[in-house]
Amino acid sequence: MQPDAHFVNSSQILNMKVKVLFVCLGNICRSPLAEAVFKHKIKESNLTDWLEADSCGTANYHIGDTPDPRTIQNALRNGVTIDHRGRQLKPADLAHYDIIFAMDESNYNNIMKLERAYKYADKVAMMRTFDPQGPGDVPDPYYGNEKDFQEVFDILDRTMDNLINHLKENRLKA
Image (tube, rainbow, N blue to C red; front, side, top):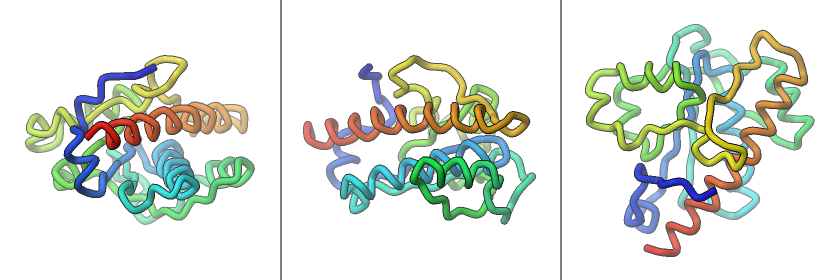
């Protein structure tokens, strides 16, 4: 799958560090895991000099909190460590980050409701845009069990591979 990445142009990728933001509701399950998986993969690929990531939530439920213990345990079982404290999305994030990935349609809509979000609409996309198994929402595992947390990890793991490959390919084409 090679989606149209209208939200990143080749000159951005070639000439500067590309800043990626992952967004879910509370910033304790999906988005900190997405951030951690992305950071793990770019570190393994020696890409940290031009790619960086953070995560946040559209709600203010867990500001300053560590991720859900089930998220941390699931990540560790899959060889990924998480070092993050919850924070809420703010309008300045839209200008600061080059790519903003929403974990689901509800959070996408919440992002687009921020002040002056229309100016940055081309930076915002659904996380599963790069999922080889197709688009859709990254399900929220909060009310689920270990199987649900593993499903989210698997979705993010394969999606990050495609995203990073896409970014590398576009960097080389610049």
